[in-house]
Image 1 (tube, rainbow, N blue to C red):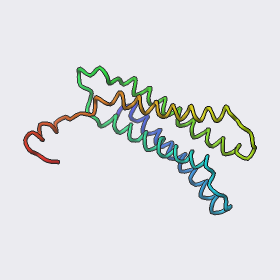
Image 2 (image 1 turned 45 degrees about the vertical axis):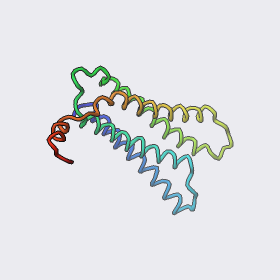
Image 3 (image 1 turned 120 degrees about the vertical axis):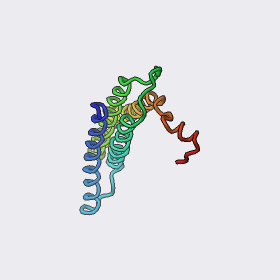
Image 4 (image 1 turned 90 degrees about the vertical axis):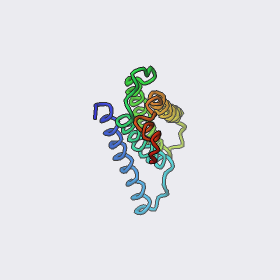
Length: 156
């Protein structure tokens, strides 16, 4: 397992820990203080788990397990996979952090347009990071070995 794969997987685990911590806070507030779930914390919890953990884990495992790029493959570029990692990590961290900040400022009746705009921008970074990753990985989604077995009539 090489460095970029480990980076994706370890970052996924870090986002899992963050998501679980936010989830623990949400359930403790609900059950012990009778507080309704804050929509911003729910969003932070969801993005930490689904984008930060699940998507990063899927992307890291895909990078590790998919067939190597073909020698003639001009689309796959490991630098793009690394760029996608940074875009997605920054976007998800900013999204989760922004949502948590928004939750703590919710009762102040202030607009905080800069925070709202940064949350939107972070969401776009998440989408861009995922798009860049799958753009560069697209040509690695191909049959390797299975084509010959299918030609012989083997079914999987």
